[in-house]
Image 1 (cartoon, rainbow, N blue to C red):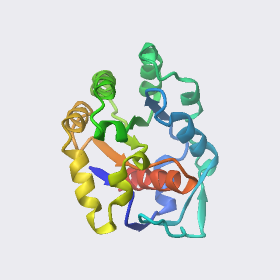
Image 2 (spheres, rainbow, N blue to C red):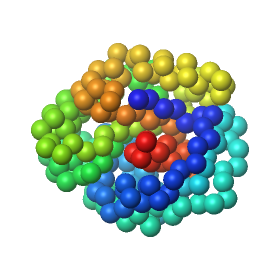
Image 3 (cartoon, rainbow, N blue to C red):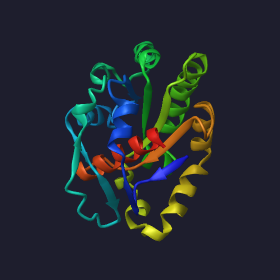
Image 4 (tube, rainbow, N blue to C red):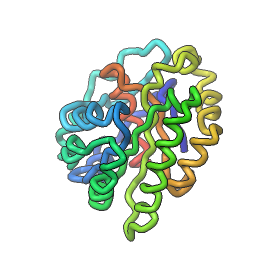
Amino acid sequence: MVTALAGTTIAVKWDDIVVALNGKRLAVLGARGVGKTHLVKFLISGSIPAEYKQTVAPEKASARRFLLNELDLKVKESLDVSGDKAAYGEWKELHDKADIVFYLLRADRLIAGDRDVEARVRDDLRHIGGWLENRKSRPHFFIIGTHCDFDAEFLSTSVGSIGDYVDKFRKLPIVMDIVLRGGGAKQAKVVLGSMKTVQGTEALVYEIFRQVIS
């Protein structure tokens, strides 16, 4: 499943999130510069609105908010993990302990056809896919495409056409490949968004949590 964060108005059931996520261990993996540290810090100290509506020109989110630190997420260890390939051993340790695994990548670079980034994410998913397959209790697994704000098409896409944008991303050979390596569409959920602003980060986290409980 692939979701883009535009034209969405859905109320998150906080009680369901608490049941699904309270005290869970999260592994946040990815190469350098994809936003791992930003996401981890937000999960530790940020918040999300009770409902969210994001369009190309974001509207004000709900004034009622949920504090993420109330969930006591076990995610701080990911702050110290390098994005270098030499850290695959550390990645595996985090993965093996995690209830939920986030793999971050530069969606904008995949859309632009960056061969170096494509090669890196294939290599990453070759390892992660093997780890997932060998887990007796399989964790929730998310492929999170960040930096969509660097893609002009994303910024100019109307609410009514966002589905076309999502479908286009899904059909990229590299995306089809890494989703397959992550266990297929039913196992590897893909979320697209931007963490350039607090509101963008809220929207991204909101959508991830919504899918965890869906």
